Image (tube, rainbow, N blue to C red; front, side, top):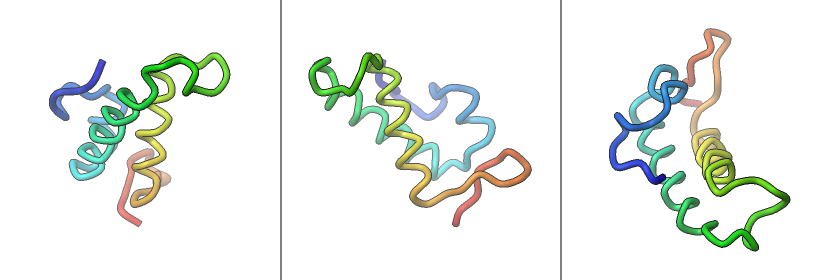
Length: 75
């Protein structure tokens, strides 16, 4: 289920991640959703959605880190 807008992202992303990072998350998720549509492209028994979320969080971590307050901040 690709995301059409950042307002469609899960609460855990919208409530704790800056807008720019939300855009990164959405773009990475949607890209991974397309890339890993074939189960043979995924490792283990993870679902397409699980893989897409992992890829999206990895993309966010490249420019942001989680602070002690539980929110994500630019590095």
